[in-house]
Length: 274
Image 1: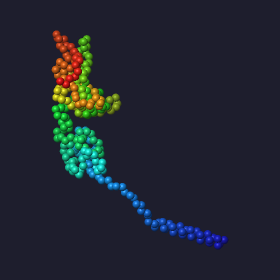
Image 2: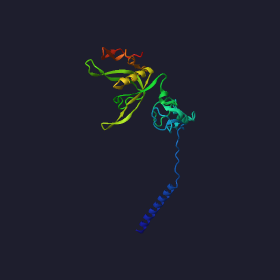
Image 3: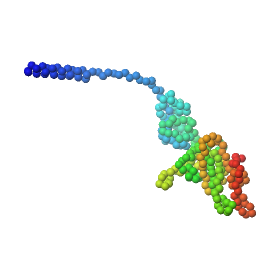
Image 4: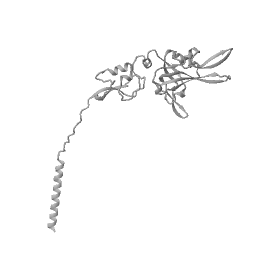
């Protein structure tokens, strides 16, 4: 029995010693270095981007723009690169105005900017055109579905005496295919919910068309805007009810005074640009 126990103990000691030896070898073993094949290096350049969301018609002051690294082969046409225009931030902060809204991180393009020290509106007006603001029916812009650069019709609604002597409403489209330059949008509480309401629209008109709108403002109970389809707005031609300035031609209603009696007579001619 003693010999058997000695054999067992000896075997255990040999096994323990072997385990300790292999553990020591593993602990002192140098880690294998894995070779990682790196891909081709990406060449970078710095381009000008919006540092925050910038609404249309805003100036670029107050840290609105900054330089950001950009892959050189991804630089698009119109991007402003620091290597080409190192003083671009100072230049644009001085007189740069956004022609369209830009979002944070979006590269600044020349096509979205206009330079002017007189303000955004005068800078974007085509030669010979005027910007005129008018109060509109809030229902026509609720929800913000009419936005700058949309094209609209302007509808005038006013009271008139009918054939029976009673008041009636006369509605007439006084301007067609008018470009919206700006529209105010404020948030109001209505039936316990917040709604977007526009009360003033700034429209692009010729001087004569502006006169039509000015007359309509005096005549109208209400002016409303109707949004034109994009497919219907392929032409920039605007039509106006110039008969309001003369009282003798055009589609709409002419007030006739005969023997002391006042009567509103509807005419059937189309809107004319003459």
